[in-house]
Amino acid sequence: MQDIVSTINGYIWSDALIYLCLGAGLFFSVLTRFVQVRMFREMIHLIFSGKESDRGISSFQALAVSLSGRVGTGNIAGVAAAIGFGGPGAIFWMWVVAFLGAATAYIESALGQIYKEEDEGQFRGGPAYYIEKAMGQKWYAWIFAIATIIAVGILLPGVQSNSIGNAAELAFGGETTVNFLGDQISATKLSAAVIVVAILGFIIFGGVKRIAHFTQIVVPFMALGYILLALGIIVMHIGELPAILSMIFSDAFTPMAGLGAAIGWGVKRGVYSNEAGQGTGPHAAAAAEVDHPAQQGLVQAFSVYIDTLFVCSATAFMILITNQYYVDGIGNAVSGGMLTTGVTINSPAFTQLALQSVMGGFGKTFVAVALFFFAFTTLLAYYYIAETNVAYIRRTFRIPYELTILKIVLMAAVFYGTVRSADLAWAMGDIGVGLMAWLNIVGILILFFMGSPAIKALRDYEKQKKAGVEKYSFDPDALGIKNADFWSKK
Image 1 (tube, rainbow, N blue to C red):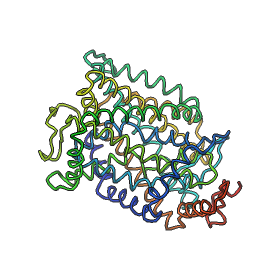
Image 2: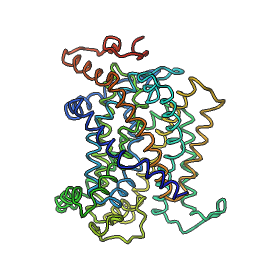
Image 3: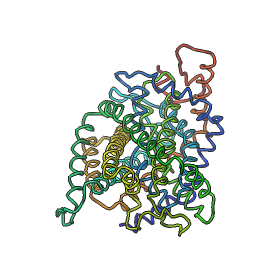
């Protein structure tokens, strides 16, 4: 299975996808005149301006739901993997992906808002909806919807839950084993699997509102607490910070450090972490109650900054500044020199050991708890994304109890992922991320050449802002945007 999955990954994550992610981000940055810089203050203002309604969630709730998807295992174990496989220079390329990806996040999330629709009393939207309505290619929309259901319903949940299991085992020990379906599994992992599945089931059976209310409370506190702890460690080693920054930048371009490895792993883990271009963000963006689609596009662009520039950077600096890493795959060009090669790179081990070196046993436990919340909220976002795509398919083809089946399948994937090997879980997750990124980025690039509705929405919003309107409005027909039925009726 590992060989088959690795072969598939080799095709999906070829250099073509890496260049596509970076190229699309640069393309949309230029087209929007670097909206991620120009409208930074507006992004922060909009986060707290929207209100929840009977049909939609607030801008802040939509940000929390999307951040719950973006801020996850990729921020702790994914950053460690990027350093372990690509060297410290991979962090620079994660920053590049975040900066350019913020423009891509605006485009896809604005499209999600423009082409959203009301379904059984709540707003729904996402790539499948805007591909069908804006591109007119229902077959392509169905491929995306099915690929997304498989990715976020089966492949990706195992990555999140696997990191919870590994972190729990490292923090609380895995010596005691039990026989489970013919395999010897640590009792700690098995207990973690049962707890995660039980809590997950309680929340996802409560619907999108319960998910939004849970994430808007948990996500800000978990991200802020993690960043503050990282800042504390950086301050304790502040004298080493210039050397760490120099190493990141020099290693990003040095052939001896493996330029291809740094870029490849930086982009791969960057896209995995912040999800810009992957097509996950538009689902939460479409659920928001806003006066203009561009508003939610800007909010979602800011979420990329929070994910990568803040949370991922916090992890990277903790690992590098405490020297708790080693590099595998690019020779001896870079070496932390503190760890043996027995530590699994595709795990939160680097991060836990970095904290342990400063805070003792509490460090490992803190990462296990933080990872639980990071990964658990991502599982909630995955369920919501899968549910939205099932709802899209349900418009044409109904399956009895389809949402109940989805919930059970996702919970089974979570349980399986918690107790299985990290390498297989991450490899399967990479397939899911790669498929969605290919389909979505190609889709939004085609939509630009078919009328660029997201760019028109941005220009319209900036025009109204310049005119000083008290309440924004959006008239797609006046802008030449077709099939935006929700906004046309409004």
